[in-house]
Amino acid sequence: MQTETVAIGDYDVTIVVTAPPYYENCAVVRHRPTKATVIVDPGAGAAPILAAAKGGTVAAILLTHGHPDHIAALAEVAEATGAPVLAHRAERVVLDAADQWGQALLGRPVPVPPVEFFDDEPTLDMLGGIRVVATPGHTPGGVCYVFDGFALTGDTLFMQGIGRTDFPGGDPRQLAASISRFLGAVPAETLLFSGHGPEWPAADARAWWRSMGPMMV
Image (cartoon, rainbow, N blue to C red; front, side):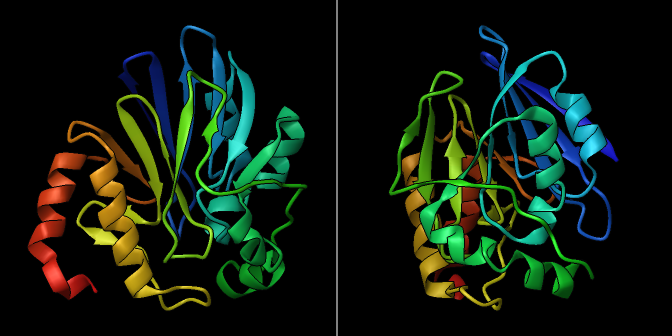
């Protein structure tokens, strides 16, 4: 597995690229002033994720959505850290079907520990404040997490690509609307870290999205 750490303002963002075939990006975000840490989307392989989180206090495990490539190590990471797991309430339908999703995509069931669900678009009171932007379309309860200077977009938006909408609960028009709204809600200099592939600036994402026009609806 590969790891990469980027310093952004008061934060260290470590991206742990998890096991094949999905090569999912798990983000470990540490707030240097407080040493508080969040783990976002712990995919397959708990050991390197936990290693990246060492040296800080894990305040929470955050989920952008509940597909198995993003939660395959969730139970193990939650048990090891004792941290609460947070997700949007609309994602409960996906997490409740984790065993079926796991069998279909990974060939095995995926255990899910207790989850604390939030509603709407709260600002989470941790790491200097984490703004939640609801971005349904890839899944019903998909979200992006916005920090000061960067955001974690899960499978909503990749570098020059968007999440699939052909799985149950996907909606292409809803996802297109979510992406337009999200890109209008973050500053142009925001660095976007997605669930797969490299990061890119929001300004570049906006230009690409405008160039796609009605093709993405």
